[in-house]
Amino acid sequence: MDVPIRTIGVATTVFWAILILFAVSLVYSVKDLQFGFGEPQTSAAQDGNITVSMPINVTNNGYYDLGSFNVTSTIFDDSGLTIAWGSTIIPVIAKGRAEIVYHNLTLDVGSLLQRDQNYLFDDTQLSVAESVSMKLAELIPVQASGNFSIHWGAPLYNFTLEQPKYAEFNFTHVRMMVPLRFENHASFGFSGDVRIRMYNDAGSLVGTGDTAIEVPQRSSFKGDMEFWAMASLISTTGHLEIEFQTPFFSYGPEVIPYG
Amino acid sequence: MYVLYFVSSLFLAQVTEAIPTLLQSIETFVTLYIILVVIGGFMAGTVYQYFFGAGKSLFVIFYLVLSLKSGLVSATYGNINLLVDLRLFLVATMLLSLLGFARSILQAINFMNEKAGLTGFNL
Image (cartoon, rainbow over all chains, first blue to last red; front, top):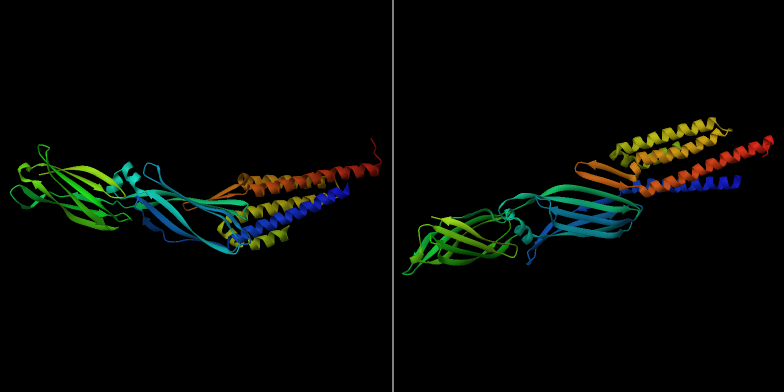
């Protein structure tokens, strides 16, 4: 019975040595892993989606390959609903290699603004859940996760439609000017049409006009909505209806009384 | 054992700076293990030596299960949660410890068998 016992003893010792060597070298090689997160780049598509692309640099100078490197980001709105989700996976990062991947997150601004139009006018904070996971030596799963918030800039911040002014007139019509002001705090610029309708106190349509606007990101807009109104229908009080049509959002008609 | 601990701690120095509880946990483990080895040494030549050998294996299993929190180790740094899944490592150590436990039992049986043979005890 001595031989089997001795064999078990030798095998146990050898496996313990391998396991401890593996564990120590694995932990030691973690210090040679380097992760770099670059500046996120924002791009807007014509379909109303905004893509945030963040370069991630992973340098594996450890003793073992990294497996299943995964970055997942989820953006939540105020009510906790998911408004954007993105995941980037690198199956294997071999030892001694450096990889750069772009982690893309697509935000459907249109559906966000349709769901809650306060995002058009109010700046707020959106919650982001970020998770980075990998398998050290393709065996030991490790996950780091955290929550933080990002700033949401409203595209129509401080939206103001001022009282209509009379610019010029002829026998039948009056050219109206309605000053419009807002600040685009969003990280994207937008262009589109603004349609304005003027109704008198009897609810009859007095005039309507379309104006094309182009607002760069993080800039103020100040312009006049100009249109011709029928002079005979103009009253001192009434209401204006304004509508926005852009690739990112459609808004309106917003009813604003005048007079 | 101490030499192994000493060499390992040199390699793990940078990591243990970041996770101070790791070094404390390893030190406690090594201390208790050495105490069991020393006590087992005092019992050399008796069957209790193998009982302490079996006890060492069980100690390794229970200590690792408790200190590694069943294999899922988590830590929090600010608002970042770190989760390390060591279940595979834990299973490997448990299997090796069970192998050591079986070896100790076999050694005890063999010891009793040899002792019975020397004293001429037969069933």
